[in-house]
Image (cartoon, rainbow, N blue to C red; front, top):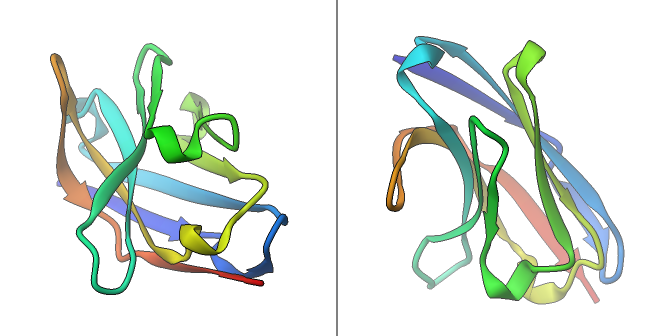
Length: 119
């Protein structure tokens, strides 16, 4: 089992920035990638960003150039730096951990953290 604890959500004005953090613990040897999903009210959950153990990253088109995912391997922590936030970024953000080969498959989920962007 892998436990994921997120922090850093909150309320921010459009154009502002937030940084989400996610600390992983437990059987982290069983995973080789981590990702951030988000779910807005009435919408399906979507993968926003993913980072592999080797450091390769992927972003959904809507956040490219604005969001950056990074990791601190020594602390088993990943971050999602979100800049130039828009109202449509409002959602619950979930940290995940899983496996990555041809695609990313999350196996473990955090509890979620709310990000609200106001106009």
